[in-house]
Amino acid sequence: MTFDFRLLMKTSTTETIKSALQCGEYNLKGQFMLGSNYTFLVDVQHEDETYQAVYKPCKGEQPLWDFPDNTLAQREVAAYLLSEQLGLHIVPITILREDGPHGRGSLQQYISYDVEYHYFNFTDEDKELLKPVMFFDMLINNADRKGSHIFFEDGTHDLYLIDHGVCFHEENKLRTVIWDFAGQAIPDELLAPLSQTDSWSGLLEQYLSPNEITALQRRAKRLLTSKVFPQAPRDRRAFPYPPL
Image 1 (cartoon, helix red, strand yellow):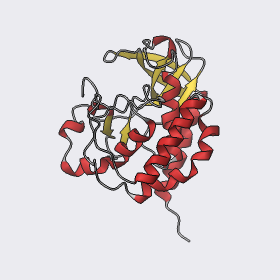
Image 2 (cartoon, helix red, strand yellow):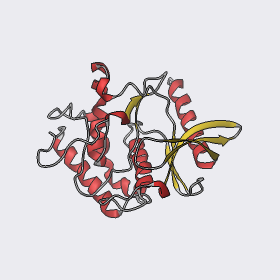
Image 3 (tube, rainbow, N blue to C red):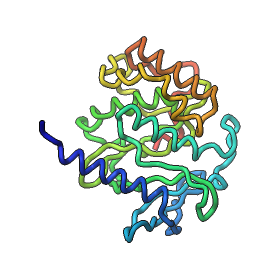
């Protein structure tokens, strides 16, 4: 038997960062000015190490007519947990903290990347790597997948997705810039985990309503049946605004 030491190291690093986000003390360093909700860069201190993270307090969420108030942070966490459950690992580590500088909110691992390199100027080779993104967004019913929400980490070129506050609605609200694979078959390795939807209730019940979890499970079953990336709908807006 051989061991993949790179995977072992990455797993160890993930657990270290997760522990830091869950238990560390964090201080505000600055505010991200773009976006409608209050979002802060913070330094997390844990076991003599400092980690950067993104803090989104519930108090800073702007009310939405179609989503329950003060639930966006929970949806951020649900997206991370589901990404891990599916084996995609494309959402930075995200947890919910009750003791933030501005109260309850999500705390997400900060990923360093080139903000000038986004979906609209990705190379053809990098765009081919986005099938898991389209699959994930269909599943979580992402209502706001902008081109800047998809990026590759500096140094590793690992793919990451951020901003999942307006996901998991019961009604079909999918709005995304990624319709590149419409009509193509969904790869079997993406579909395989969808046979385990019964376990999602326990995983997500702290963050989503029972009806939202049921709707998620139904979407998974439809994808498992169709096995094809859908076409963009023509009876409603299918793209976010602004797209970037």
